[in-house]
Amino acid sequence: MLKFISKALSFSLLGAVLAIIVFLLYVTFQSNKHPEKVPSFFGYSPLTVLTNSMHPYIKAGDMVFIKKVEPLEVKVNDVITFKETPTKKLITHRVVKIVNKHGKRGFVTKGDNNNVKDSRIVSENQLVGDLAFKIPKAGLIAKFVSGPIGFILLILIPFAGYICLEVYDRLSKGLKSDHAEAEVKG
Image (tube, rainbow, N blue to C red):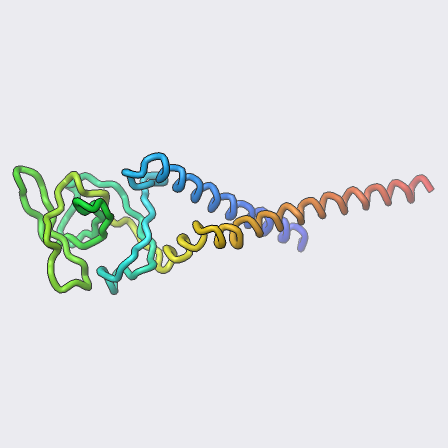
């Protein structure tokens, strides 16, 4: 029974490590291939929050997952992510008012921790998506894992350890069966 639990945990760990590797490689590949687009995975874009402008609801280091939505779906009080012009940096703030700007929908936004509203109205074409969910402090982990030291410590070393354990397990089974055959013949 203990051996079965050990194998199940081993396969679970391998599955989790492989899923993380695939996720990181996919997002990295997507962001390198299309730097102007926000990488997405099954329709969700993971982003790390860099500032405390939305504190206490969202803190620096949290990871937010943004789901693409149509501008008509956005309501007052929704938290949206948009591309600021002209810098093209991504900002996640709360919608405090919806306006019509030149016949198109626009959003007045404000960070929860900011004293004033954002100076520019967010247009429909700047909208990246709506906040689907957040994971506290996961952005710090993602940033660490995506760096070279984190990748080595959290991905390569456990994966290499798993491979070594599997090789050892298979070799020891082979030696045991050889030893058992020698006893039967002898």
